[in-house]
Image (cartoon, rainbow, N blue to C red; front, side, top):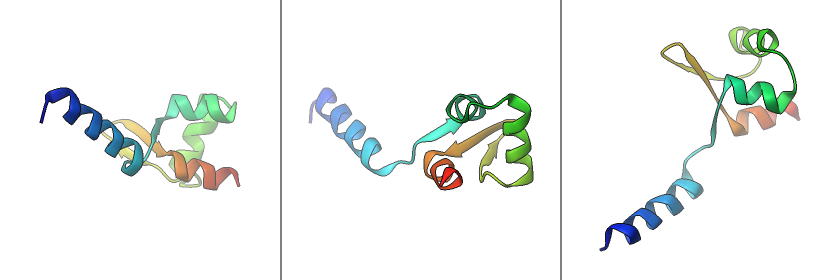
Length: 68
């Protein structure tokens, strides 16, 4: 299999199977709120997220559920 064909298959798999993960900054932009508000939601657990080192990551699905 050619490298480009493999890369195309890998990209298609990622789009269909892997969750979209957002940073705290991206969440701020989507919600239209400030940094303190986002970190309060994350630290309280009101908005489900995971920490990787010092950085927060929020699944797009979780953010959608939080909004609705």
